[in-house]
Amino acid sequence: MPDQTACAAFERLFGDAPDVTADAPGRVNLIGEHTDYHQGFVLPMPIPQRTIVWIRRRTDRTVRAASTSMKLQTGAYTLEKEAVGLGWLDYLQGVTAILNRHNHALTGFDVLIESTLPPGGGVSSSAALSVALLRALRTLHRLTLDDVDIARLAQKAETDFVGAPVGIMDQMACSVGHPGEALFLDTRTLAFERLPWPDRGDLVVINSGVSHAHAGGAYAIRRRESFDAAARLGVRWLRDASLDALGKTAMSAMLRRRARHVITENQRVVDAVAAIRIHDLVRLGTLFNESHASLRDDYEVSVPDVDTLVTLGQSDPDVYGARLTGGGFGGAVVMVASAGRGRAAAQRILAAYEQHTHRHGSVLVPEGLRFAALAPALQRRSR
Image (cartoon, rainbow, N blue to C red; front, side, top):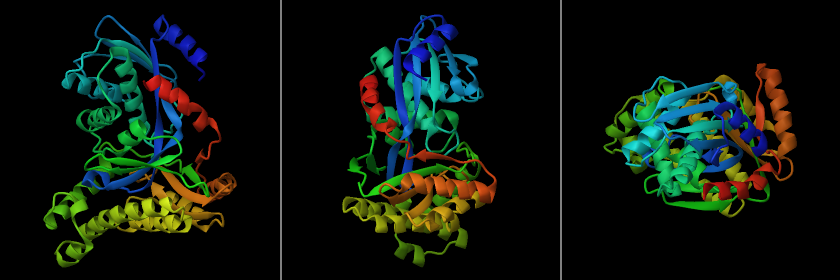
């Protein structure tokens, strides 16, 4: 939605023009799945699709919100009376409740939301919304928050209010990530390094069309199982465990598989960073393939249609490797392809996937030049 169109829609809904606009990108996790809540390493990267918010200050304590994804239906709640149970508004309520808890004073506001991120697609639509709203409120109320502060608060909004037991990777990627660069992140210290994507490779991201959700369900079960495995190993975080210790510790076969995935995935992130630094796409692709096998067999978070999409990717002559990305149970698949051939490969793979599964997917990356064109606007808006 162009800014002029958005401003007109905002005025129709709320009676006046917005004061501030801000946005945040989604992310694809190149590798490092289910390591972030064990204080491990991750390697996400921003994608072109993003969430944009337009916001105007009110003089009362009311928040009114509308989303283009919800056909501009307006919902409302009152600051300091936030309560879970309002559907998508819970993510906004989480942000304002957490800001209040951290003594950041707010007035009410009107907000219009637009997103090109598929909800439940494994590309952090919820984190992008939280980060975009926090950026807008930072500008509107001149809050003293840096980008890491915003990531921390966005995570707390999801974990403490919405009840989604997520790590901090998504919020950090959406808040501090740069276009065209992978973000090597240590989730224990939040130290990070930006790595330019190799120019000899194309990044491909395909949404499987299988939606997932993180609040509760199987994701929470896997997380709990992994911490049970860590306790058997005598550590709080599986980042601090080793395969040698795993081989010497008594536990069920299921818990052993959960721990093995996290331990080996953490090492795969380090190895992937080394491969990117020397532009070794063959090695990077192999790590992608190994990661998917571990997610499928040891962590058991894949589903048949996603496995089909991954297999089609791995079988394409222009693709070095493919894996499930995100928390699992649906979502998107990330692939690394030969430079200049990613778009054609993505189209071939998607067509074959839809023929095999009769499910409608979509290519998220490559998307063209729009990502680079939006980057300066993102920087201007978030200052």
